Image 1 (cartoon, rainbow, N blue to C red):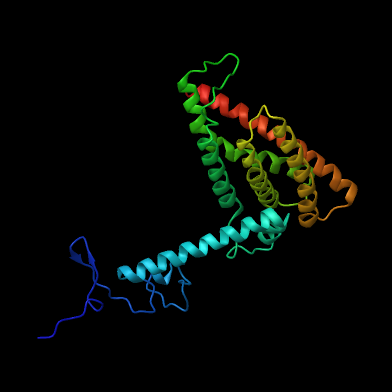
Image 2 (cartoon, rainbow, N blue to C red; image 1 turned 60 degrees about the horizontal axis):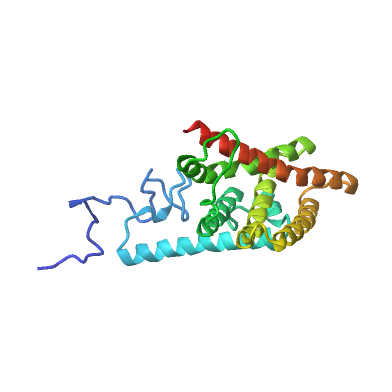
Amino acid sequence: MLVKSRRSAPPLFFGSMIPDDTKPNQCLNCQADLGGDFCSQCGQAKSARLLPAREWASEFFATFLKLDSKLLRTTQQILFQPGQATVSFGKGHRVAFSSPARVYIIVSAISIAVMSLQGVFSQPVVVPGLDAADGFQRRVQLLFPFVNLLSPFVTAGILAICQPRFYFQLHLAFSLHLWTFLVAIGTPLVFIPPTSIWSLVALAVLSLITTVYLFLAHRRVYVMQTPNRIIVCGIVLASVPIASFVFIAILFAAAAWTS
């Protein structure tokens, strides 16, 4: 009596057999013929088939490492090549790099985690006219990550006003990369006591680094005469504290409104 091998048997799903009538080079979703790893009709990946655990795990970790390498490559460009990540995005180099929003969200999440470990959110929030009870404190902590996403839109809007002939998508990508850089270099400040003289020194150094970074990034991304570039960069630099103020105002207003 012949026994079928496990690989040739149909896959099990909740105790029932799911027949696989498609050919190896046929899309599982629309049954169109496949000419590569993705279907030309519906876009579904060829790897959607059920796989043995070993092959599935190997494919999963390969995909994860690929995404991780994209994130590292994009972050490296943002930190050490001002404006290059935005140029790559504008040229359509999307597969080799992570999206601006994804990088900003991940870097912000790491920054918020560091702030939480350092007890930044445990410090009492004092707002005139509002109750600084524990409930308000918790709401501020919960809303912080969501309201944090609004800051790049303020800078992108100011860029769009100053440079209307460029697409807003380019302004938003530039703004997201800029704020990713600001969050990355600003996170170490939580390790310095705010009352220390070193806090002021670090803030001055970071302000100088941000000014140089912004000018170099803007020069790499936007075609513009130098006098106009200086004016735009100055406005964008001013937009950083403006965006921070708007961010804090919306954060406290949302925390008070949900009370």
